[in-house]
Image (cartoon, rainbow, N blue to C red; front, side):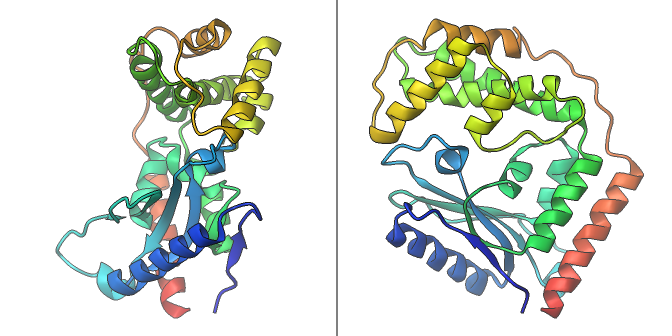
Amino acid sequence: MMPVFRAIPPDMSADAVQQVDAMLSEIQSTEGVHIPWAIESGSRAWGFPSPDSDYVARFIYVRPAAQAVTIWPRRDVIERPIVGDMDVNGWDLSKALRLILKGNAVVVEWLQSPIVYSGEIWLRDALLDFAETWTDRVRLEAHYRHLGLRQQSIYLDGEAEPALKKVFYALRPAAAVRWLRLHPDRLLPPMHFPTLLAEADPPAEVAQLTRDLIARKAVSCELGTGQTPEPLREFIRTTLGDDIGSERTQSPSDEAKAAADELFVLATLRLDAA
């Protein structure tokens, strides 16, 4: 058996963790797949949870080689209905690899989550190395800009009295865009939002307002509604720009696709042998 890594903060609900573990076990048994990486995403992993935050468990799964050899396409997502505060679903490793090559930051964030239900470190490290080598920086920044502008449009500009907690939905991708511009020698922005924001070097007033909101959110189920403080709105607007534009990107190279295939085959065979 391969060693399994686990990192659960002591303040997380033991009952909730037990529920997630049970759901992951059920998925492996019912779907006949192996889950080598299962983590918490969402506000708990981003570092700005509320007392009533949902448990957003995400995972990468690998099918046995016998399942992969078929002429019939299989779904590359496994989902379970959201029940109460439990939100559990995951992606096939093949989907994860394709999205990394498209500059989608979601998988890379999963690989950096500080809350790990179960994980095989060799696969995490291999995927992070793959992302560091083959992620298109332009595509990655475009991903965060698209996300931030969409959230800004919905939550900051589209609602007269938005919930204050929703500012984080636009603030986090804006901070990632700024981080990428300030760190040309690094490629993967930190998932943990307080770390990300600190490394993005925002104006002092933005940093203080954000710390205050995080502290309030940590002890209150609701921050209430109201206009987002203007320094935060201005930081988001100026960082993201006015429109998405047409960022010029290239399709993944044949070399990148070959590297993705190689890692996919390695993971399938290695997990089959375990």
